[in-house]
Image (cartoon, rainbow, N blue to C red; front, side, top):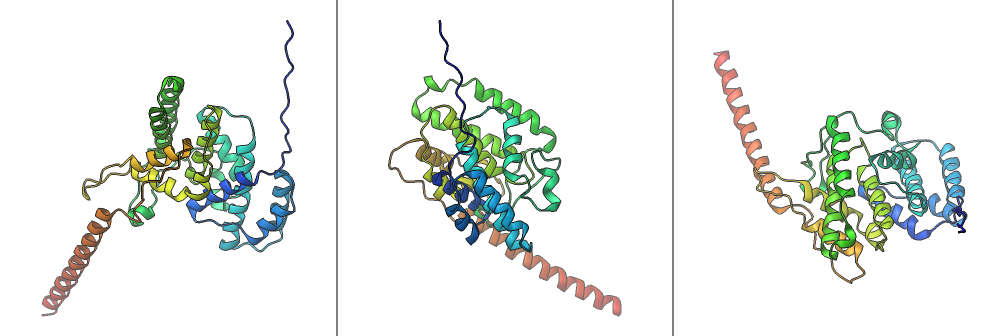
Length: 301
């Protein structure tokens, strides 16, 4: 019996512009935009390696400030996301999350975050979300439980047999898995982008045809949908709403011309209640100031 030899994939691939657009789109979750130079370098480059060399050389000769740092991050991360999506190799494990994080953010983060590249966080974090009026955060996993929680979610996912599921259940299962690992938020920075890249690689490895326009054009919808799927607040009468994330993955995994469920700019009930709290706090502050002033007057007498 004859066996065919292994074939080697090309390590120096030509740039796929569609994947570059995915990288640029994913950076928008953190309000990052590429520099003017990025497009110039892109037009002058044939391969991902050539593009990365140009970007690194360009910023080595630039005076660094907050604006240039953000552009540098977007330029390099866009190139690296595109290259990583194009690479054929993939392993379904929590270690892959670390490797993706290291490959994409190496040499990108500002000085105080360099030690967090490619490693799970050792602190608890929060982040004010636009969809929550910028005033509240999803409750992320305790850093002490990250490894254990990821191991559990990956093992649960490995035992699912997608070939036997309906399209509807496939979509729901994939969306649930992605939502779960996003809620863990294993890294200090860059979680949404890394988990999106991992999801793309994972879904591609299963043979699905992905509608890449979703990450090019709707990355903020993706993040907001993840927030709404994992946020609840009894005080404001808000419960987790998975429908937006399900809508996103349905459009991502199907070729149907379906509309995304309209996303609110901010949760109305949250915004209304927050305004009431703000007015209440202002009233309490005024009352405290008045009482404090009266108290001081009494002391003077």
